[in-house]
Image (tube, rainbow, N blue to C red; front, side):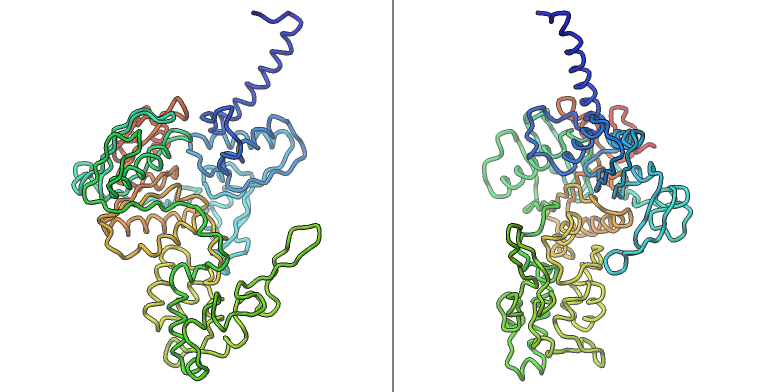
Length: 497
């Protein structure tokens, strides 16, 4: 049944509006989302891109848009659409400020303001500003070399394709699930494996919904997931997902407690002459239950103010000023090196990892754990920093701290977008961490879009070719060079460029 003539212009206007909005969603890599998808199920990156598409559709003008890491979760293929949308916003008379580390996004900027030179207490200054060419030439810039191409975070591939599966194979067979077709995939043991593909291509389904549950079921002697037909993983007895979820919700969990540094320090201080003279034990130095915790805030470092008609406001404790300790704790002092300066436990907890590493050099057990945090690129975090407040990338690396230095030949580590929010220099550090795990025998699988990580992988499994119903297949697999030669792979096209 056709519409009456007088209603056709209205229908055409509605269709044009929908086509325009749909094109923006496709440009932003959201074509795999169904129209009935609940907004509450969207990731932060998806929600941010939905808001961008709506802003362009509304043709606003004179608005300042601030975008925090808009490239999160985006394949380079989708980033072109993102930068196009931002250009449209500017052309409509708006201003766009974005916080990002992705060089393909930064290279499109009209003006860059770079903060540094380090993180934490070693940063907080503007070290460079100007156009992209000016940043590339600025000797003080830490990002300039990556924008110009003179520097790269990628490390050279070490394994030839003929030796790739010499350490063994993890094999997975699945039937169709969601938009992913039946799969037969093989992962080389003891290697760095990158799982790539555009947004919605099936990476998460294959790894997080298929491989991990199948490995866990196989290890525990349980029934495989319904859609998994077979899993073979000889010699694998543990699988560990290292994702960006926050570490707990308890403000009493800090970097020092999570890394088991605080317990070590409490035992050290309990053995000091000052502590013995006052009758203090290791448990007394706990800010959760010990005698030396601040009685005003009960060792939390903050107090809540009840503001009528408004949410409670948390402020630093006026007595301990956020240290969590009573004044008596400052009287117990200890020199960590012979003839060195003396520190109280609250003073050590106020240090960042690098400062504490230097101050506690004389305590081998503490130094070893702090050195791991430093090697993971977390030297700027203070020991008393609450773990729920850490970024996703920081949380991932802190979770790894307890795994470093162990034999891992029976372990599979899975990382979900570990480069989110990371500067290229931090990506270099992360790749060193991956290699450290592999050198200890681990198999490392990384779901990733970062081209430097993909170039550094021993083996790449590329999903696609597109997202949603047009994806869900393995379009290419092999060394990064093999992916480059694939005509069907969007990832290969960007690796070639």
